[in-house]
Image 1 (tube, rainbow, N blue to C red):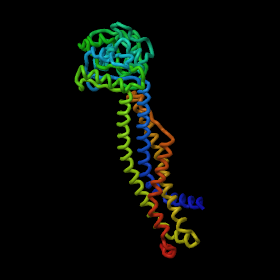
Image 2 (image 1 turned 135 degrees about the vertical axis):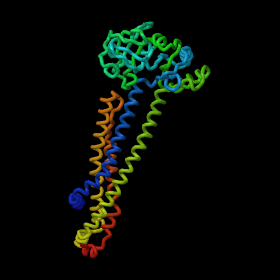
Image 3 (image 1 turned 45 degrees about the horizontal axis):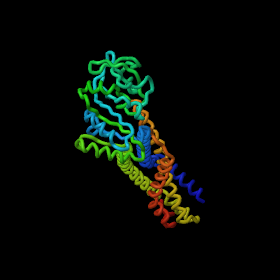
Length: 389
């Protein structure tokens, strides 16, 4: 019996032709937007989490000012941090945006001055080619993974020379890809060389702290903050753990996701109204057919089921098309961003729960939108229905 009702519902949808497709569009747009946005934000959140885990959950970062760019704090504060209980390794750097010349090109990029053990002790900095900067070495550089071709058009190879502030630096190594353009397009030189280039001898921009245990990171971070507050004002530095950064990123992504899903929800509401309107029109067009079905023994629940199937299938069809389009948009956005900006962190995440949830939701929206028209159809008087033209 249910199969017969489903076949009738499918026949009704087919008979409407273009009107059915126009009705589906509202659901289609809303589901496509929801799927695209959720898969992108979920993928970005997972990528960020993976990056921070790779950087080490036992790592604490101390910035000069808010983010360490163009701000400096006294290098003596490194000793203060080293004296905090629970710290294992303390490395630091100074950084700023500088003009770098290679052959006939002069470009602007981030230049980092690294302490001797930074590349060895901090997990996110791994050498792909060549070697690290050695202790007390001067006049050498390690380049980020995409310095060529994102910064310079000419290929930068090992043993090539870069000119920074009228001084030559020989390239001795290249980092593995980190995933952030600001990191992958940077150039790392010895700390003292960078301090001299910036006229900031004895100052640093960022301090990396590796805690003895990942479980005690928050406590060590609090102790570092207390120790530094005795030496400087609160607005002169920022202490962050990987966990706190990840929580902040997740919070922002969740907010963005909620806003866009809310906007997409408006489209779903409009689509639901469209289905309701179409179903009311269908009831008017099928009034005589309803009367015939009732005359040969169809009960009210049979009539109602046919129209609920019809509205639910309209919603489900829109959902299927929306899922396909949403995933296509998300994958296309991932490809474009990777190709245009070299941002590897954006990875679309497609989970079975997202697809099943989107399809279920679209079917429910369609079904609920058909409840009132279905009740009207089921409540028609057989005699009056048969008289309808």
